[in-house]
Length: 271
Image 1: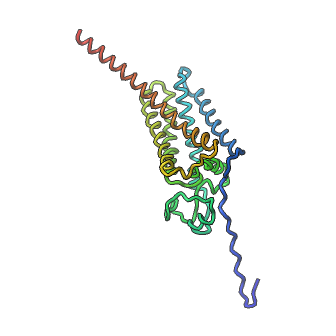
Image 2: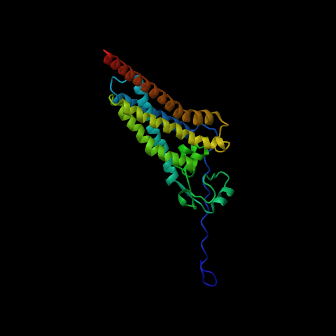
């Protein structure tokens, strides 16, 4: 439209789309069920692979170790890999500044210090909270219990990079070694490395929360506390500790046998 003076009216600015509100509330819905079924599917796949790949003479302990390490690798690749995808590729373009966004939208939680921006982008928010796809909704579900997994907490993301790209392949290597019965010493070594890394990663994930009063954890609901936080994270403490114990027992037994051989050889010298 042209005015009396012949100039065009300035177009109206596009409406500001507010950031999506993260999922909240202790409810069991389709996302909850699908997420739990996906975990069971990975476990079933790991067990099926153990039947296919392990020698028929494999002991129950070897099978448990194989299933655990393959399940561990699949969780790292599929679930935690999708978490990193959200952190690097799922974004929300801010119509205003970071500080104004956090003031105007109470559900936005910023996980970086003031004037520090994820990937150096002050105009974007990253993380699962700002996506609508199934991989985003999966982490929105877990973020009900721990808000950090809906955004880009620096400690969590840094640990997950190591988890996906180092711990995941290492767990696959352990599975390969377990299929080769003659390489026990090498298998034990890498199992110790991985188990130690898993325990350390769990400590670095939750210790900052405990030391600051757990501001990002929601323990008010039994499902969040006992299923999401305690059970799923506890698996990566119980199994690594058990593995360290088993390796210690095996190494102690091997050393005892070697010492016995040395004693016999020493006694033979006296003859």
